[in-house]
Image (tube, rainbow over all chains, first blue to last red):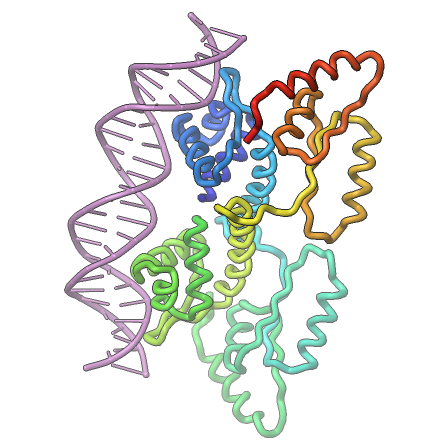
Length: 168
Length: 168
DNA sequence: TCGATTTACGCTCGACGTAACTATG
DNA sequence: CATAGTTACGTCGAGCGTAAATCGA
């Protein structure tokens, strides 16, 4: 089973015709015809009833179409996300170590923004990685815990980061 | 982008090694290596950082992995549904014409079984198709409206259906 | 040097397009 | 006979495996 086959299936179902689907997808009718046929063989069912005036979904085909749409929708979302010049999903990324208070704060924010169109990412990682995530704009916020014991180490890490070439 | 590529990606991420993923999927390392590489080029990002001790996900890769899992999960559901000997999804299928009362009754049942693991299918079709759906076990229930005007026609349809060869 | 990935290379199968064939109204 | 889908066939590329090269600890 291929994403390609599922896309073909959907186009045919929406067009009501293999011919029309082929034109819409800029490919040959035979190509789609064979793709659909092999899908039918693989799943052991008849998706369309063929006639000389086009095709119509069988009951099995209608059910399959639902599943196919689910798969292809997810795949399209993925591609849209990484498409050239595609608007990246609006998101808030945070890098922190595994501190209870940071996780709790993060969860609070997520809860408050439920149903919003933002994406939230929490990265739990090492101190140096946190600094670098923020430096390279991979994360919007980095949470560090500063105390007397690690003060010198952290300041060294900050100084080192400042010396590095700009991330872009 | 291919389902194959996404499956490879997931296996590698879970194994932490291209080698291990290759063994798990019974394919060659070079195969997976190239597949991942082409996926990275297509999406313009670095998914893994390679080392001589295996691979680890980048931040971009971690995010992508989420999307990939969504797609592949849906695809696996589809395949499981039609797999040979696979247990078909428990479901209730009804064939009826577009009568308000039948639709209402159907919706009631669906509402009452919300969150259950059943699948509900309502087919709105023609009288003869309804009869045939039930005859061939495509639907569990067929709803017909009988009155003085269509009595003769329906009885004829029933008689005809009885004459047909068994559907299996 | 060992253990991992990458690259090189040849093979094979599948996807594709052109075109001939079939069927139905 | 017009318009759909199917089948036949040749081409080309992608995916595959073997094996050599590379890189890092």
